[in-house]
Amino acid sequence: MSPMSPTPPAPPLIKVCGMRDAENIREVEALGIDLMGFIFWPKSSRYVSERPDYMPAQCKRVGVFVDASIDDIRQHIADYALDMVQLHGHEGPDFVRALRAAVSSPVIIKAFNIATKVDLEAIKPYENLVDYFLFDTKGPSVGGNGAKFDWSVLADYVGMTPFLLSGGIGPDDATRIKAFHHPRCIGIDLNSCFETAPAVKDAAALSRFLSQLSQ
Image (cartoon, rainbow, N blue to C red; front, top):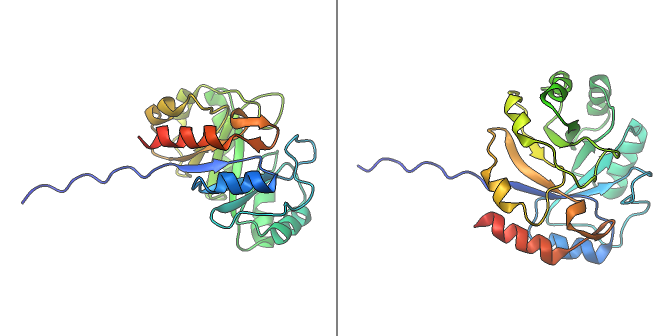
């Protein structure tokens, strides 16, 4: 009897964040991505101030918030039929607990801006509180800076919460993504490096990148 073949690794989850335009949403959704992010932070150049004429039906909808109130998050969940909530500000563990109590269904992602392994210390209080982490690059803005951090520092992350890798991932990074391995990394977050303008993604560049990633 031949030995059982090892189970191949699951393909990474693909999140495309910072969407706003209805036709662009359709184009990107058609690529078969898993998660689509909508930014509800007024200071962002990708801020969604009103519901687009089309919202995705084939991928999960992620609302991105920065130090918003629970009432504001709850209202956006209802208005946009959000599947997931991404907290990208200074929301503490107590806030996460209160949010859990206030909203029953959405999955919660907590983002952290990383530069060195010291930044990983801030993650520990959130273990067993959120569903996923997202590791982004420290920069002048809370996200969408278009810059990478040193992914090797994530070797020091030994928690059990799965995470999405973010921060300046662009069209030329497929090989680098495939070479990155961490037992808790389940996907990647794509944003500004695939844009032709804020909140407008280059669907052709995304398609080429996803094809390279799957080879």
